[in-house]
Length: 367
Image (cartoon, rainbow, N blue to C red; front, side, top):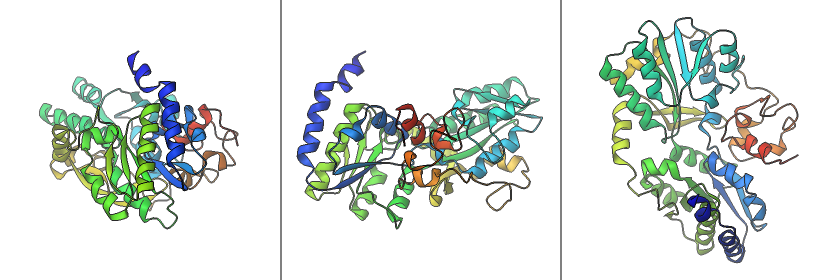
């Protein structure tokens, strides 16, 4: 396959690594925002091949992982209703809520289904008007356009038995929250290429200028990440703080304007709680008033759950919050690899295909 030859070439990788070693003269700390980038870095051992003075921090770049516990508990409460067909992407089914997960709920008889597109959920609702179909809309800006199209399609069909449980989060406000944190250690960011393919990178320019941090839009293959790290180190060494685009084959500064228009029509910006970080002003999306009838939380009464309710409680043995903020590594957790494994996870970072704990475990990293 051509992409393997182009973006996983070991000769080019060694050349880029040599350039990083030659360029870095001082200690630098760089955070990759995306969980997909984390998996490549850990699986390929890139973090272990970098010079000792260049440290990678694995950021909160997994939408499954940052979905707050209260929202998961809301999903369980809605999915347990006898009239509901609850649909989701597969990686959400095993994320633990306070009292179990969606997969366990399905084993006990709930109608919980895996779909591969939100439009699949719309088709289910159109095919059976006697069932109320709920789609669990989780993700960064990357999945928001498809979810917006699903709402627009349901609206066009006049479906009154379709809704979404929305937990969309936005990346730039999270970067700002990390930089504002008193325990922040990050000096440069690798921005997620797929997010920027949708939104462009104009939102990152004020952040780079205000906080004087380099931000490099980066792809997901080993050579993408090595070049992105090299570009960030060069900026740090030069005292520059710009937004640069390593992922030029997929990302333009303006992004995908048609996708942005769909998102702006269906959603509006709101304060959103990120697991491990807390509430972030303008940190997520919710349905706009015009489409409020498709909001599952409004449609269903969920008693005893919520941010102030008694039902939601994090597992005391899980340090997911510290891992998602980049303060700790999975191997710092006493439960990692013993009481917490991909088969029996205590927290979301061990469940998700983009979770940092799962990345470490799959790569054989031990305490």
